Length: 166
Image 1 (tube, rainbow, N blue to C red):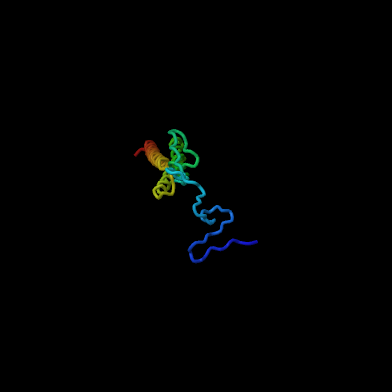
Image 2: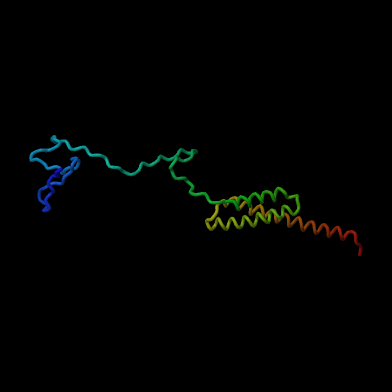
Protein backbone atom coordinates (compact mmCIF):
# COMPACT_ATOMS: atom_id res chain seq x y z
CA UNK A 1 0.00 0.00 0.00
CA UNK A 2 1.32 3.41 -0.85
CA UNK A 3 0.58 6.68 0.85
CA UNK A 4 0.39 10.05 -0.82
CA UNK A 5 3.23 12.45 -0.34
CA UNK A 6 3.41 14.17 3.04
CA UNK A 7 3.01 17.90 3.21
CA UNK A 8 6.24 19.76 3.01
CA UNK A 9 7.38 21.08 6.34
CA UNK A 10 8.39 24.50 5.05
CA UNK A 11 4.81 25.77 5.17
CA UNK A 12 4.75 26.65 1.46
CA UNK A 13 2.55 24.71 -0.88
CA UNK A 14 1.62 21.14 -0.08
CA UNK A 15 -1.60 19.84 1.34
CA UNK A 16 -2.89 17.70 4.13
CA UNK A 17 -4.15 14.28 3.13
CA UNK A 18 -7.74 13.33 3.96
CA UNK A 19 -8.69 9.94 2.50
CA UNK A 20 -12.40 10.79 2.53
CA UNK A 21 -12.08 14.27 1.11
CA UNK A 22 -14.38 15.80 3.68
CA UNK A 23 -12.15 18.66 4.81
CA UNK A 24 -11.79 21.67 2.56
CA UNK A 25 -8.19 22.01 1.51
CA UNK A 26 -7.48 18.36 2.15
CA UNK A 27 -7.20 17.57 -1.53
CA UNK A 28 -4.97 19.52 -3.86
CA UNK A 29 -6.78 22.23 -5.77
CA UNK A 30 -6.48 22.44 -9.50
CA UNK A 31 -6.06 25.90 -10.92
CA UNK A 32 -9.29 27.46 -12.11
CA UNK A 33 -11.46 24.79 -10.49
CA UNK A 34 -14.08 25.56 -7.86
CA UNK A 35 -16.05 22.64 -6.39
CA UNK A 36 -19.27 24.71 -6.23
CA UNK A 37 -19.86 27.25 -8.94
CA UNK A 38 -20.65 30.70 -7.62
CA UNK A 39 -23.40 32.75 -9.18
CA UNK A 40 -23.14 36.48 -8.99
CA UNK A 41 -25.27 38.04 -6.27
CA UNK A 42 -25.78 34.82 -4.37
CA UNK A 43 -23.96 33.72 -1.27
CA UNK A 44 -23.63 30.39 0.46
CA UNK A 45 -26.50 29.58 2.83
CA UNK A 46 -25.45 29.85 6.45
CA UNK A 47 -26.46 27.20 8.95
CA UNK A 48 -28.02 28.72 12.03
CA UNK A 49 -25.98 28.18 15.19
CA UNK A 50 -27.38 26.89 18.41
CA UNK A 51 -28.61 29.72 20.60
CA UNK A 52 -29.78 29.77 24.16
CA UNK A 53 -32.22 27.14 25.35
CA UNK A 54 -35.86 28.03 24.72
CA UNK A 55 -37.67 29.54 27.68
CA UNK A 56 -40.81 27.87 29.00
CA UNK A 57 -43.94 30.01 28.89
CA UNK A 58 -45.30 31.01 32.29
CA UNK A 59 -47.91 28.71 33.81
CA UNK A 60 -51.52 29.80 33.64
CA UNK A 61 -52.93 31.11 36.93
CA UNK A 62 -54.41 28.36 39.06
CA UNK A 63 -52.40 25.57 37.41
CA UNK A 64 -49.17 23.95 38.62
CA UNK A 65 -45.94 24.87 36.80
CA UNK A 66 -44.88 22.79 33.81
CA UNK A 67 -42.58 19.83 34.25
CA UNK A 68 -38.99 20.99 34.40
CA UNK A 69 -39.90 24.54 35.39
CA UNK A 70 -38.61 25.75 38.75
CA UNK A 71 -41.18 25.95 41.52
CA UNK A 72 -42.29 29.37 42.73
CA UNK A 73 -41.68 28.72 46.42
CA UNK A 74 -38.35 26.89 46.71
CA UNK A 75 -37.66 24.00 49.04
CA UNK A 76 -40.12 23.14 51.77
CA UNK A 77 -38.82 23.40 55.32
CA UNK A 78 -39.91 21.01 58.06
CA UNK A 79 -42.74 22.32 60.21
CA UNK A 80 -43.55 19.43 62.55
CA UNK A 81 -43.09 21.38 65.78
CA UNK A 82 -45.27 24.21 64.50
CA UNK A 83 -48.05 21.77 63.60
CA UNK A 84 -47.76 20.00 66.98
CA UNK A 85 -47.88 23.32 68.81
CA UNK A 86 -51.01 24.39 66.96
CA UNK A 87 -52.75 21.02 67.49
CA UNK A 88 -51.94 21.03 71.22
CA UNK A 89 -53.18 24.62 71.51
CA UNK A 90 -56.48 23.70 69.86
CA UNK A 91 -56.83 20.58 72.05
CA UNK A 92 -56.11 22.65 75.15
CA UNK A 93 -58.85 25.15 74.26
CA UNK A 94 -61.28 22.37 73.31
CA UNK A 95 -60.68 20.59 76.63
CA UNK A 96 -61.26 23.72 78.69
CA UNK A 97 -63.58 21.90 81.08
CA UNK A 98 -61.16 19.03 81.77
CA UNK A 99 -58.94 20.15 84.63
CA UNK A 100 -55.17 19.72 84.41
CA UNK A 101 -55.32 18.12 80.95
CA UNK A 102 -55.94 21.53 79.42
CA UNK A 103 -53.15 23.07 81.50
CA UNK A 104 -50.65 20.38 80.47
CA UNK A 105 -51.60 20.71 76.78
CA UNK A 106 -51.34 24.50 77.04
CA UNK A 107 -47.88 24.40 78.62
CA UNK A 108 -46.58 21.98 75.97
CA UNK A 109 -48.14 24.09 73.19
CA UNK A 110 -46.37 27.20 74.52
CA UNK A 111 -43.02 25.41 74.77
CA UNK A 112 -43.24 23.83 71.31
CA UNK A 113 -44.45 27.07 69.74
CA UNK A 114 -41.54 29.02 71.23
CA UNK A 115 -38.99 26.45 70.02
CA UNK A 116 -40.59 26.37 66.56
CA UNK A 117 -40.49 30.18 66.30
CA UNK A 118 -36.82 30.16 67.28
CA UNK A 119 -36.05 27.61 64.54
CA UNK A 120 -38.11 29.62 62.04
CA UNK A 121 -36.15 32.76 62.87
CA UNK A 122 -32.89 30.85 62.22
CA UNK A 123 -34.24 29.58 58.88
CA UNK A 124 -34.23 25.92 59.93
CA UNK A 125 -38.00 25.38 59.88
CA UNK A 126 -41.22 26.68 58.38
CA UNK A 127 -44.81 27.19 59.54
CA UNK A 128 -44.63 30.54 61.30
CA UNK A 129 -48.41 31.01 61.34
CA UNK A 130 -49.02 27.61 62.89
CA UNK A 131 -46.32 28.17 65.52
CA UNK A 132 -47.81 31.56 66.42
CA UNK A 133 -51.30 30.03 66.64
CA UNK A 134 -50.10 27.27 68.96
CA UNK A 135 -48.16 29.73 71.10
CA UNK A 136 -51.07 32.15 71.45
CA UNK A 137 -53.67 29.41 72.15
CA UNK A 138 -51.31 27.85 74.69
CA UNK A 139 -50.82 31.17 76.48
CA UNK A 140 -54.58 31.82 76.52
CA UNK A 141 -55.25 28.34 77.90
CA UNK A 142 -52.56 28.70 80.58
CA UNK A 143 -54.08 32.03 81.63
CA UNK A 144 -57.60 30.51 81.78
CA UNK A 145 -56.29 27.55 83.77
CA UNK A 146 -54.48 29.88 86.18
CA UNK A 147 -57.67 31.91 86.68
CA UNK A 148 -59.67 28.70 87.20
CA UNK A 149 -57.17 27.44 89.78
CA UNK A 150 -57.22 30.79 91.62
CA UNK A 151 -61.04 30.79 91.61
CA UNK A 152 -61.12 27.19 92.83
CA UNK A 153 -58.71 27.91 95.67
CA UNK A 154 -60.54 31.08 96.67
CA UNK A 155 -63.88 29.25 96.49
CA UNK A 156 -62.66 26.39 98.66
CA UNK A 157 -61.17 28.86 101.08
CA UNK A 158 -64.34 30.89 101.27
CA UNK A 159 -66.45 27.76 101.71
CA UNK A 160 -64.11 26.57 104.41
CA UNK A 161 -64.43 29.82 106.31
CA UNK A 162 -68.22 29.91 106.20
CA UNK A 163 -68.55 26.88 108.43
CA UNK A 164 -66.29 28.26 111.16
CA UNK A 165 -67.29 30.87 113.64
CA UNK A 166 -64.98 33.07 115.54
